[in-house]
Image 1 (cartoon, rainbow, N blue to C red):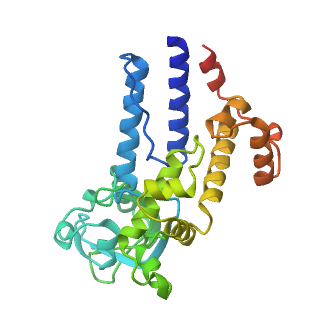
Image 2: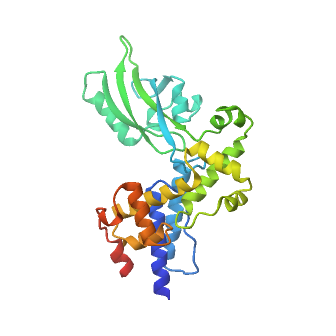
Length: 306
């Protein structure tokens, strides 16, 4: 019995790691009553997921509909010691620091140590300016972002000019767009948009389970079926069930591509009641059957059999 339970826990950890690899840090592995090394791993995986979620999605969203737009000619003015003497307003949007936190502060406070060395080498080797290099900036409470920077100088001035193209995260999951797109949504509050995000998160966290009916889902989230169905289609341009099915199949494809887990197990792990249904849906979605997929054996199967 304990051996079987351990195998189930390992499978659950695999599922969790696959979800994290796909960018979903919303899932958590339930803790058990066991006090062993596996339980320690479960706790650590949950902690990593929580930390990654807070770092990458500080607003609490796990949303695949995020893209970067770019603002050109964002500029820093530095002195010979790489202290920030001035900058354009876009820098504040990019780094999320206030003006007082940036002015007269060393550039080393907002770029990585490796980037500082790279910048210093440009001036130590007397490379002809301007030159373009890549620097890793560290926005406030976010992970580093790599940016191509043009380094130059003004005539008869000692200041260094650092021009860069700054990425600004834009989220198509925008409550204001929901409110302003047409008249019928003009009075929709932000809370209604957040409701649809919660449904999105719920689906991603329960792909291995049958999708509840629209009536059950609307009751679970405290709304009506019409608002849930129309709201989801508005944001994600697809139906709730189609999104659920596509995400299951994409996760199954990922598992098949990166592991040696048996196909029938992958079918069950992604919420399909029987293999023929899974195989038919998979072929319809990707144009080939699961048996025709090229597998990348990584040893997960042998781990489960130990």
